Length: 120
Image (cartoon, rainbow, N blue to C red):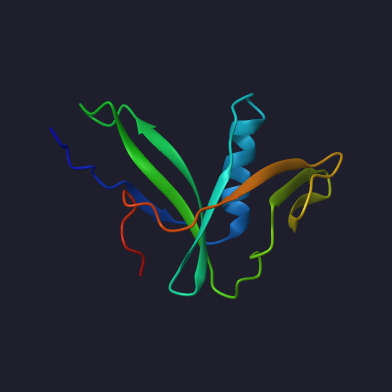
């Protein structure tokens, strides 16, 4: 028997640093986390999958927080690096990790997963 896979709720954030901050907050709690990237309409989409728990009488609502890289500025990134200290917050794209930074891996997907909605 085949069951139709329901789409997730997609929420667009305004900056790549929002995605990096969300991923880093999960990682610093000891949970593995990564950012997925795929090309859609000649732009790269970066995002993380999460579950919004205890939503009324559902067990959880699947969420996809995403950022659209309009200029393909981060297209070669293997990691997003985040550093937050007394001078503020910095997010950088990199090909590797760096000491003193939270290194969030970027996983390149060949295509948009079917469970994600169409993007505008």
